[in-house]
Structure formats: structure tokens, C-alpha cells
Amino acid sequence: MGNDGGSIPDRRDLVRTKQKAEQADKANQLRAMWFFCALSKRPLQEPIVSCPLGKLYNKDALLEFLLDRTSFGDGEEICGHIRSLKDVKTLKLTPNPAKTPASANASESAPTHAPFVCPLNFKEMNGSQPFVYLATCGCVFSQAGLKAVTGTPPSKSPPAETPGEVGKEKGKDSEKEQTKDLDLCPQCGAKYDRTSDVLMLNPPPEVEEQMRAAMVARRAAEPAKGKGKKRKAAAVENAAVEPPSKKKASSPMPTTNPSIAAASRAVAESLAKEEAKRKAAMSDAVKSLYGPKDGQKKKETFMTMGTFTRYA
Image (cartoon, rainbow, N blue to C red):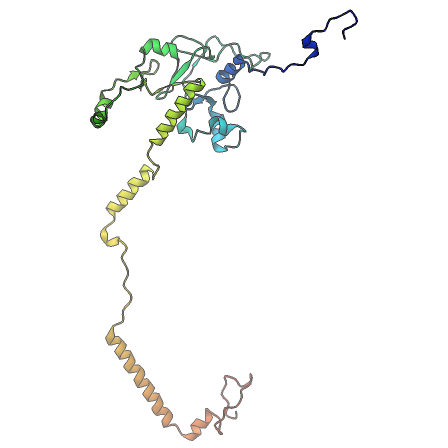
């Protein structure tokens, strides 16, 4: 190549340079987050649930993971923070009227329209704009549509307080909770707090870290698990109904009446005396029947052992 008058080689043809690192396609990443289950990588199909970090899952895939946490290779990395179905919320999604049923020739991996839209402004849930859901009822809206209906949410950072005012504020917490204004869901009318009950779906990394910290703090504030309410109530009822006489007491050791013991000793002594008198009055002829004549006990064999014979 070259030196033949036909071509002039360039530096890039002769020197191998380091290739640039491959970058993931952002469009494919958005499509994977909003159109497919984060756990099973299958297309999203109702019922769909979301965790406190805003990820989307098919409920059947999540159930399979909770029953066998090794059923998916990267399950612990994706949803290891989910302990049970109580940690997720079933979403109430609005189907997209512009989405047509998938035909046999159409490819499900590259859908043209998002399957769900915001019920307020009918924006498609495809990742082009942020979507949120309400933790109390599970209704899903676009962030812009919810802001337009409810107004701008108040600042989440509370004003600075002096140490002396902390005690006073704690005493007023119950009154504030009662007088706190709660917003109503535009779709179902359920009450929610816009500062804590509005969670973003598929948030950016920095927002996801904040949601994870809030989840950890919320779980740390949960009371320790004890007996169930039904078991506690049954134990209290049993304790109240059971009379004090049924309580276990140390059983005393059995005692013997001293008069009965004295009578039994007297009877045993009288029987022993009568037996001695009978043996003393026994003649030599009778005694010879029960023992050898020469006074030495003969060795018994298995034929005469335990038997009485006159001629032994």
C-alpha cells in the first residue's frame, strides 16, 4: 500500500489509535426503564408495582423473586431492598388510547407508543418527562400535570429551630398533624401529603439516593416486630379470665401420718416375734425336713435347685 503512485497513506491508516469507549444509547435505556420490567426484562403488563425507589416491576415477576430470591441472576442488585409485598405499591395506570394492539409482524422490543399516559394532560409515559405516583392510592400522573392541578408544593426544608424551641415544637406535633392541610388525589379523591407521599418514577441517580436515604430512615423509625395483634389480645384475655387458683404453685412433698407409721411398725414387730416363737417350738424332726442332718448345706444341682425333697 502506497509508493505505487496510486494512493497516499495517511497517519490514521498507519498508526493504530486507542478506540473510544462505547457509550450506551440513551434512547434504549429510557425504553428499557419505561417499557420493560426492571427485574424480568419483560414488557410491562398490569398489575404493575413500584418500590420506594421508583422502579417499575411486573407483579408476577416480583412474586416469583420473593418466593425464590435466586430465581433471577441480578435480582438482589435490582430489588434486594424489597422485603415483601408491603414494600411496594400497586400502580393505577391510565392506558394510552393511541396505542394499537401489537400485530403479529410488529416487534414488541421497539414499541412506537407508550402503553400508559397521564390522565390529566395525556402525556405519554415514555421517559421524555418525569412521572410521579402517590404512595397512598397508587395513582400515576406526570409531574407537570400534577403541579398544574395542585399548585407548587411547599419547600421540604423546615426552618431552623433553636434548641430551646425543640421541646415546644414536639408538644405541638399532634396539633399540627390534625390541622395540616392534605391534598386530594385528582383521580380518586384520596388524601395525600405532597411533601412525603409523592414519589418519582425512574428517578435520576441523585434523586434515587435521596429516596433511598428516606426509605432507610423510615424503616429505622418502624417499631420492632413483636407478637401479632390477635395473639397479644388472646394472651391478655386469657390472663384476665384465668382465676388465681389455677396458677401453678409449688406442689408440697407427700407426707405420712405418724400414727399410721407407728401402727405399721408395731404390726411388723409382732409378726417377727410370732415367727421366732414358731421356729423355737419346732421339733428336730421337722427342722430336719428343711435342712441337712449334718448341718452342712449340700451343693444343689439344676435338678434339685429351688425344690424340696425329703431325701436330699
